[in-house]
Image 1: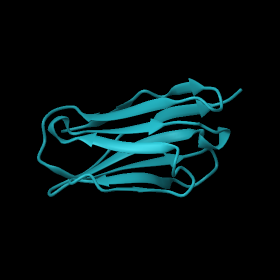
Image 2 (image 1 turned 30 degrees about the vertical axis):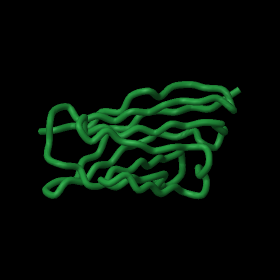
Image 3 (image 1 turned 135 degrees about the horizontal axis):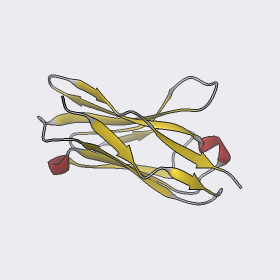
Length: 115
């Protein structure tokens, strides 16, 4: 079964940057919509950003202007560039991808923003 695997997380100081990647373990059919979610301890999972097959993007108000979602269709990969990180960005980040036949979730990757 195809899996999506996140990478690029870790520990960063407030104001710093991280770039998350989420890539398919093998080639799959066209992904029409890719999204990033996050879940902080004790909180519900929240939507962060998404990007369509054509490149249209949407962002949660909490990250707008700081985060940028992008994708490489040939590689079935979605990215999340996170700048000016805040402590409240600390969470496990999950990627989500939708093809015409399946819905995929990554296992999550930890992002910790701390002084």
